[in-house]
Length: 209
Image (cartoon, rainbow, N blue to C red; front, side, top):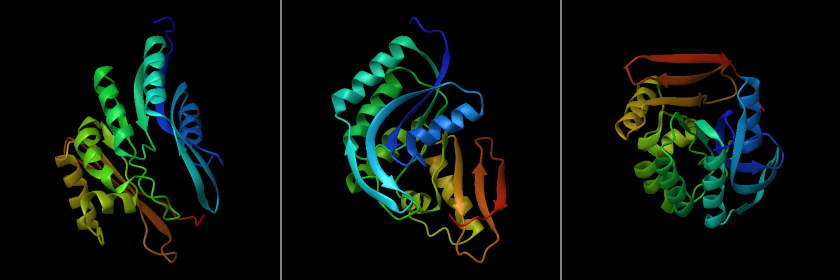
């Protein structure tokens, strides 16, 4: 290892409009004074109206990125994003274990706010069995949490139940984002459940985008 800078790694797709995926992760890293490096899983053609096309990276290219980054950087935290299918999930899970990566933020990236599906139907079990147990924290949006838990999450009690289910699957901490059911509600709520059993509702004003 020749580079002693401490880095956070985003494993994600590149969204062409910069509003999500790898560009958004890097903005978040930099805003907190964290240096970021990138492992690209997909290129996404999209804009504010939705996703028009996507191109997945070859598995051997994803593997090569893991190898060269770990050979040169001291990676202290990881955030996963768009993984798309079972094969990519397998490669990512294998390398997270092989390189003993810590402080893993698992963002499911299953369903976009426009309703586009970004994870293949046959990949859910691999995601739940291979990645969720590695997560320091899992951060599904409301619709992704519904998909992962099978619950409607129609009230606060069910949202708490869903968070407990994700913890039982192996995630240490859970953040269910964006509990907001209609445009008449003035606030949006995120629900945080920690591994020590404590929890908190995080409330902020709702802005339609």
